[in-house]
Length: 212
View (tube, rainbow, N blue to C red):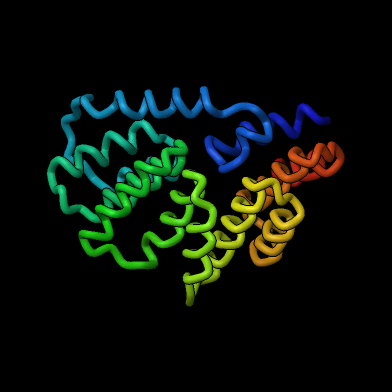
C-alpha cells in the first residue's frame, strides 16, 4: 500500500512547495522541466497565437504547447496582460517562482486586476521560500471568493508544511476540503503531510481518496 501513496503523489503533482524535501526528489525533475520549457520558444508555427488556446492547453497539462503559444502571443503583443498571467501560471507549475513573480510584475504593470494575480503572487513567494511574505499577502487578501478561499487555505497549508509544521498544515487542508470536498490540492496536501510524518496508514487513506 505504501508504494501506492508514492505513485499517487508523483502522478498528481509536478511541483509542490516542500515536497522535494519530504521525498528527496524534485530537483532533477524541476531542472528537466525548466530545460524543456526553455527550449520551446524558437519552434515555428503557422497559426496565429492565442492566449485562450494557451489557457486550454495549460488546463490539459500540456505545458510545452501552452508556453510556445504564449511566447508567440507576446511577440505579437507585448502588452497582452492575459498572456503574462497565464505564463506566470506555467512558471508556477514547473516550480520557477522567480520567473513567475517577474511575469506577474509585468502583468501588474500593464494593469492586471488584483483578483487575477494575488494568489499566484503568494504561490510564487512560497516557491521561493519567502514564507513570511507569503503569509503577509494572504493576511492582506480580503473579499476572497469561494474558490479563492479554498486555494488560500491550501497555500497556508503549503507554507506550514514547507516549514515542517505538519499539524498546522493538516488543519488547513482539512478546512479546504470541508469547503470543497473535490479539492485535489487539499487532498494531496494531506497525503504529503502523512508522508512527512511517516504515517503510512494515513498516507494510504489519502492516496485512496485521490484515486476515487
